[in-house]
Image (cartoon, rainbow, N blue to C red; front, side, top):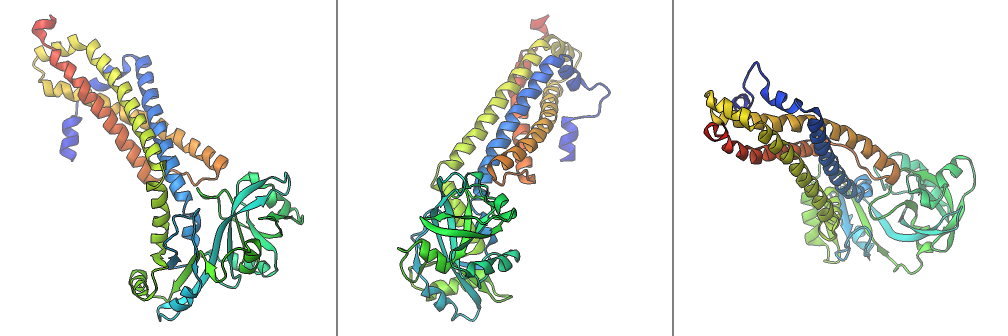
Length: 393
């Protein structure tokens, strides 16, 4: 690899590629602006896509569970189907299982206590004495749910649900309606909105069944299974699949998150739309860089012909154009990376989506910018075939 890099960028006293680019500062700035714009567009499209996929499993990753029971009719977190609660009792017969938590999961209408408007919110019902999230703070807050009609409100929910968090911290009593039933906010939790839900609330199973009286008796939407230390989740899941009826599906915790993300990736247009936007940014950048390098080669065609007449081989001159493309990639990437960092911060503040820069995305966009610039340089090199000293002079 070092040898290939040395061939592309041999040691020389005269940095010809840089001199050709910097000879016209205006053209260079236009090229860098175009590359940076294409990079920002790719960063935003990939950031939105990955942020939406990550947001769809915010709750999934926080559950205190090694295995998860779902109904095979469940499509995603916004279309949960019920299954018999007694399946968790059957699961407890396996010696590898340490404990279970039955969870009710559905979307209900929350009434904004300030504006009185309603908005869908994700409601989770569970026994306050059972572990739900791996967050240890929830255990102490869940005690208040033992009182009927109490809920824990997600303080990271979107502001359309009302100033619940600020009012609660001020010591105000917050009473509102959920699914047309009166509830009181007994505490706050920090979970965050997901792609399918703008906000969350937690309540006891007893209160949940009051809010959803038509829920079938003995039916739950989610079963959390905790294994004893040292037990292999995949092996236990395989064993339980053979023992339980086909009215439940068993996933590992990671498999549960993958199941949710696969729904949004394959059953919706999200992945295609943002991938297409990334491709468009790549194409725009290619066009800009090609125009810049093609114009540069055309303007300096007599000089290239002179160098060829002096004995410079064509591959060496082609290397000059390739180095111009590499320089443009390096100089255009940094501004796009910095701008994307700032825009990610604005997006997080405005939408509460977990959009953040990571090394994998940074390397991917850099590789795309590098391919964009070197590919454009490769197309521009064809112009050097016209640099025949006999014809030009």
